[in-house]
Image (cartoon, rainbow, N blue to C red; front, side, top):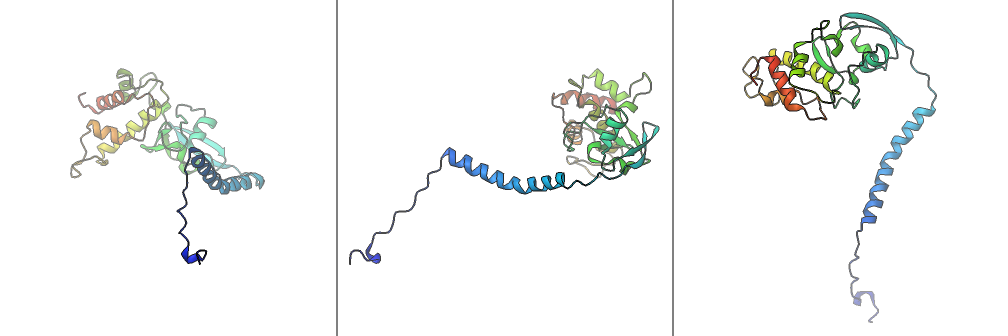
Length: 224
C-alpha cells in the first residue's frame, strides 16, 4: 500500500540554477537564430548573379553649375557628390541619416544626402558647403563658426553649417520645433533650447555644441 502512487510524497520542485555560462549560451543561441534568416537572404542576394540595373542620365544643379551624370539608379546623392563630382565637403559619417555630417541644401531646405537618391533630384538646385562662399568671402555663418571656434576635428562642420542655414530659414518661416512654447507667433524666439532642438540631427563628437550655438546666434543677430 505504501508504494501506491497516491501515498507517495510529492516530488520536490525542480530547481534551476542560472549561471553566467547559461546566460551567455542562451543569448548566443538566440542571436544566431535571429541572424540565420537575414544571412540566408544576403546569401541569396549575392548568389543570384543578377546584373546591376543600367545607368540612368541625371542632370544635377550643384552650387549653380549643371552636371550631367550617368549613374546607377541606386546611387545616393552623397555618393554622387563625393565619388562622381569630387565634392568631398559633405562627409559620409554614419551613412544612415543619424549624424548629419552629409547635410546639404536642396532648394534651400536641409536634407541628409545619404538618405536620398541622386535621381530624385534631377534638375533641382543643390547647395553644398563648397557653394556657400563667394570667392574668398566666406558665408556669414562660416565666419561665425571660425570666430566662435565652432569646430574641432571639423568632420561634422560642413553638415552643421548647411543644417544651420536651413534651420534659420525654417525659423524665419515660422516653422515650430518640439520645444516651441508659443505656436501663435510667426517665428519662435531662437533660445539656446530652440537652437539645440532644431540642430539635434547634427552630431558633434568633439562636443563643440556651446560654440556652435554661439555661432548660430551671432548669425541670427541674437546677443550671446
